[in-house]
Image (cartoon, rainbow, N blue to C red; front, side, top):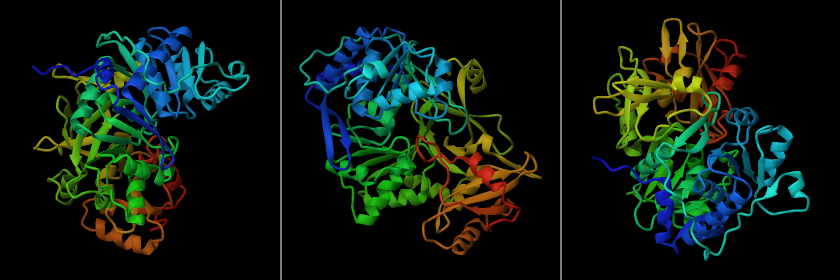
Length: 533
């Protein structure tokens, strides 16, 4: 019988076994950094837990944590967990007020700017009873924004917190979905869920002694120390990751000799482009993990040029509700794009990770249907959203499955193939197009940065429009010639009624990698049939 994965608290307590080890590196810019040892982290966790109790935060309280500083995030999340409170992670965006009204948090922890927005925009109004402000103090801050929560990095001489082991079914955290594929929802993580996710991350990262993780996504940086990794958090623009200066990523990577790199395609593209422009290589890196959107061959090839020959580039599949689920090496991904199994066009996601199962719900005659996932990484519910929970859960063969909303197939070797979102199907007169079927091929055309298929018109009578984001400086006629060549033998190539050029696709705010197809479709609807070709 397989042993249960170690819990969040067990991993936190284990940090005391290596007190002098550097577990967290907070970077500012390309060169400046602050290193935090395990002893300092645990000392800070204990001090913050005491400050939270003194402020009236109690077990079971839901506490929004909104800060861009990785040290403040780690101190707050770890300390809240230590006292049995529930951290709530959400990006600042237009829907925050409605989201917080939904979950009714009693505590709001954040930097001054977050509290200014809270006061001005009514975030948590009527629910938040305890407002705690991080960062430097200033006169009148307490009256204006809330009481101070000191989160300075201590010297490490204080005691580690005494953290009781929670029950697996206890609520550990609420993390909101990005809203890029629908209305944002608060995803519940029980302690068993977090344990399963940390165990699955172990399986996909395969950490070794001395590994250094460059995490370009703030929540993953908070988990890095629990994975036993020295975790480097670069200064990413977390509201617009693709606008991060590339030197802020590559500089820390080289300086701290990162062996593992984790980021979205948009952020990894910045690293690959910077290395190409400056003739740089990344000799310490042995594994790169791409997540948040499909990994395209051109990006994988660009990254590979900067990496040692033996380094791996993995495309990781998952969602806020179930992360991670599957992974595939870029070399295997490239070969499968060239010769996919019959009837299995799209993008291969690889096999599910150990302990995780995937199946296809309601498959058609070709095996295409909705991807469903089961296993310890799956969230049990959306918080305060029983309607959404019921819609996303199904029971099959006595097992509870999460419906991902993604379309896919399973091949004879047990590999998952992704063909896009159910909500993004294009249905025309006598045809149905999945987005990934066309895009995985169109994205290989020279001069194309990426593509997006959208439907214009009512369902069942839609016109298929292929939107193109070209590489800078290329001629449209050259791009069109390359697209015709790429799609010439594609079984659905003739279904594309219009080609529309767009200088930069709108994307999600979390990763800048998921394409906002609703906005693209609205733009495409303003062009007559046959528009830009």
